[in-house]
Length: 508
Ligand SMILES: Cc1cc2nc3c(=O)[nH]c(=O)nc-3n(C[C@H](O)[C@H](O)[C@H](O)COP(=O)(O)OP(=O)(O)OC[C@H]3O[C@@H](n4cnc5c(N)ncnc54)[C@H](O)[C@@H]3O)c2cc1C
Image (cartoon, helix red, strand yellow):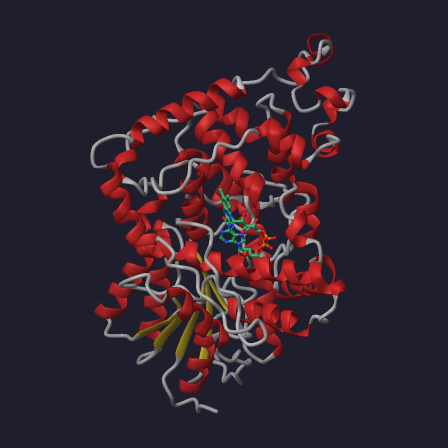
């Protein structure tokens, strides 16, 4: 155990709110007394991609972390302020201290903030040890061998909680402020998942042993997906669970499944789940490699494709679930109330805003970012671009919301649950309520008429995208995108018993 004479280790918790498998904490604890720090940064909470639901989920997660530290005799030091000022003040006070943290692939703002913190550390000649979190590689030269490295990282031993020598005589800081202190608009999200390590573990456990069996076939429908998908995304986003813990729990489950016909559903579902854990870091790697993807089209030839300015009235109708297209509106209202949506419906909502409504993806993406409790910039912006056709290398996929409604909500029960004003609409018209002969007299003033003609808007969007793809130099630029961000050929695994299935089939 380090003695109190050794240099103080300021462990800066960011999106790694746990003590278990926390490599930065372990490295720090071996080197000296630990000062665990969390900084609430007002400028971050003024951004357009953050929301009250993020703030409350974070509060719960940080409180849980503080409780775990307290149980080990250490106190979380909490500060509200500018990161480089807060850390600089601590470095001035504790001469010779070292800053230790995980690397963060956040949004453009956190990227710029980290650059400022690094500069401040250099100015003070203070070391900052940054350790990779999960399978994302900083300053990656090439995607070759990426999946193999991911497997290797995930296979490393899980680090236990180290003994901590606390730093005494440091002010623990203020109470957690209210969201309105940061002028965050009210954001009730009554059915939001709760933050914290305990909730994270319970969610993973119930998925792996109870809820996950029909995952593969249930994931595409919003109602069944909410029950049978893992729902671990917000815990991974804030690091209440480490990716390594999650991957190893998944592999362990795969290894211990009975080899009988009864386990066939489980085993298919677990394979799908493990692939998605790969995808997570695969997508985050894109933003790590090109932070501009948050606002700039991945394919340079598509920069002028859509208008720069959003039509606020149209976007507002979409964001409130008032487009007049029942399945779109039901998904949006479900998202508003729960903070979660399954993959397919996230893709459909994005596709509808980007293609049918022809709105800039940056604007609709910010709205969705605020609504997703699990907002993870790396996945989010890469997916938003993919579902908006701006990567230039993926197949154009324009989801038809009427077809999706028939496929994923055949009896309309999901629609009726989230749009009670449509409860009296007969089954035959629930997905295309504008075709119902009584729509005018029954729904006027209660449910809007469709903002677009679904078929026509899709055709117009398709024509625009395909004509942009035919321009000179487009193919050449696509090759460059593929070389930078594309996943490489699927890897063959030796055995499911010893190693994960690391196919990267989705994405570029
Ligand atoms: C437009 C759009 C925006 C998205 N934004 C986010 C976001 O901000 N945060 C986020 O976590 N996910 C995002 N996703 C990916 C995916 O929809 C969610 O990860 C998933 O629905 C979360 O639910 P789950 O934890 O039950 O996932 P599960 O299906 O149980 O998957 C387990 C984990 O694998 C990862 N994962 C699953 N699907 C994907 C995928 N397609 N791409 C990358 N990783 C994946 C997630 O970490 C997820 O928690 C987005 C998808 C789209 C189409």
